Image (cartoon, rainbow, N blue to C red; front, side, top):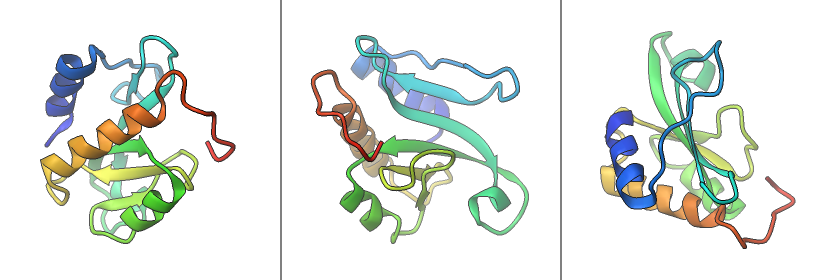
Length: 126
């Protein structure tokens, strides 16, 4: 699954369009709720060495929000890393390099969407 697949999915399922907020990072795309404006995902292209991975080539990652226990469990699996530039307790980066199945990525995107939906209790860990 690549970034365009995710963009197509969130447009169809949630009515979300990616937002490009930073001039210095023109390919970083934020996914957020239309009602409460909370982010439920961000796709970034990041040099592998900045993720603690070997090499300097750039790879796409999707950051999603989940509860701390799930985040800890996910980070123990291949293709999952601490959330890049986000709260490491509640955000996880998913490598979009084929390591994680498309179904798992979409499942976790749904989790993140629900966790950031209007009416959800604000976590002190976010």
